[in-house]
Image 1: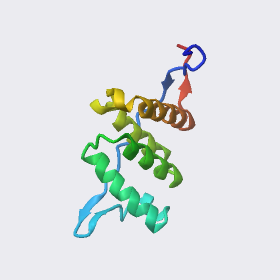
Image 2: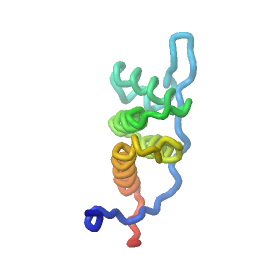
Image 3: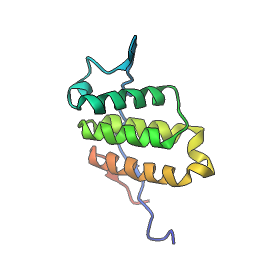
Length: 123
């Protein structure tokens, strides 16, 4: 029943511009960004690959969700919000096959926005 699962709309400042990895001979790198120093090498490498997929507009919701989890772990909730906003702008976010994942991403996005200083507005 949808009556008790409604979330109030969230007002917040615009999410920061998404940091995308630079191309190198070995793949992609976040070297030179504050994000790179806050993650283990394995997590950083995974995040670099995921952010590249976000940059080329992947249609997999898992990619965006996992990148947001790693960015939260790195202490970058603004960047995590930007990644989730990217998913919500994708046409694939409206596909019936991704309905469950899109709802989960929307919940995470609302939580991050509130954590970043947004205020919930009764709608």
